Image 1 (tube, one colour):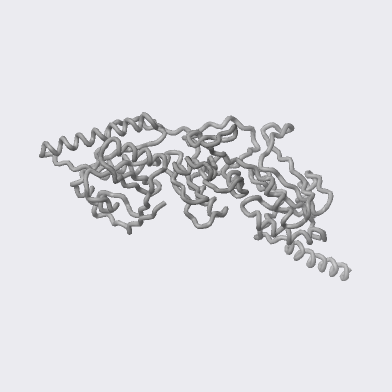
Image 2 (cartoon, one colour):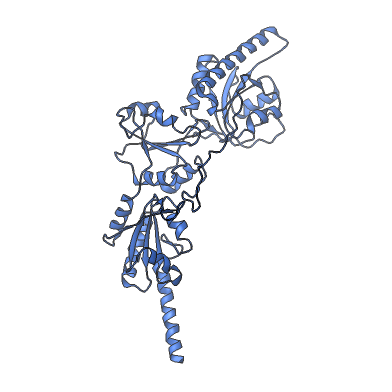
Length: 437
């Protein structure tokens, strides 16, 4: 009896490191179980490669190093997972997918289909992998299965599958922000396809090839690849400036503009999804006199979306000539505001404020943003992104209208700031930081 217990203990002692040696829980291969199989494999739009294995299986041990290397190569592109079918608690899953030998590798596609037997539920039909058990073969197979939700953009050679740039920019304007990749590659990369899967229904991803010369010139593209994001509310564009175009950096950048991530497939009966109601601000044709911090906060700084147009106008009310010049400048702004409202409607909030440039608070703003001491002056502020754009042209309808349209279309460079925007001298100001986006 003692000998039997000793042998049993030794077998358990030997088999335990065997299991651990196959796949590290913190390694590149995701270990799944019956408890998390649905979340990790079925309730995701990511392509998932799953190995059904047994830790005692010799072929599984031989495959493990290749499978781990494949997982490292596919990181961020395809999820690589494994499930231990020798574990009693996982055997229902292995049986459900008709696993009869080890190792068995199956690829679960991005898109699920409705389960006819269970209305309101979804299922995925996996594809068996029968190729060579090498890194190269496994990676090539997995990459070939990544779908693409990237929208080709072409003004030069439009087809049924492409949209013109204007059509793309107009699509789902109030719902999704847009991402545009300018590339010199002939085919969409696996990386960009994978990002289109990760951000499916959360962003609109478009792609412009180098041969689209008019579009390239329109956006002043100087290098490839160049990637820009266009905010759904303001229309403001932000360029991706990280040195490396890798999945981790790109996903971090895109998340700033994407809708929150949700599970794409619900296990409950779905009602038709209602779009969240957005409170529409009534159009105000007036130019707001921001002569106090309270008005400044209410009309600009506290708003969740939109752009603030600051105008610095000298007004000495005791002089008739100054009053007339001020009224003329206000009328210019009202005319421009009305034209922009007619063109863009309430899809983009442009909040016009004016400051008396001879007041102490206005002088503080001018100094904080390092604007030229020449009036009248104008700049655009995005308080939510903490960026601003100074206007350097003539203070007339044509110049201001063109500038603001270019701002909305993302054609004007932005500069970052890192201080509290305030009219009060007593507020502590942080060091000014000017960063070109």
